[in-house]
Image (cartoon, rainbow, N blue to C red):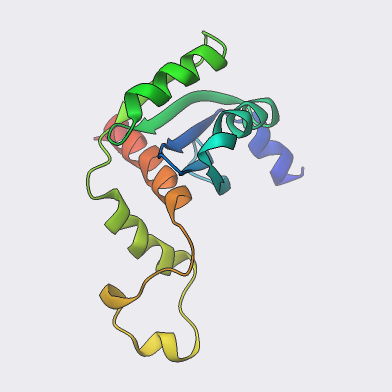
Length: 144
């Protein structure tokens, strides 16, 4: 059995880190298997989310509760099927946590290994990793 196809039959959660200029999106199975993550321009976020809900069996949208969250939630409610619940989770300190997670996912190479982790800056936006963390925070609330 192809594990990729198996993953697609499992319910998934879409994580969304809303922002003014760019947004992070991620898809994770309820088994915590990461299936997709990407940073997209804010102007393309709704289209990307719609595409992902067609590609994956998304059962829930989890989004951050800070910057521009109310406006984004309103836009998502208008664009997505009414049966798809959208919940917000606390995203405080998620950017700092995402920076640490970035280096776990993509360990530094060469001379960058010598720079203390707290001083390293990821070479790209990490909004997608924030979206991953938002899903994990939601799942952790369920098991706590």
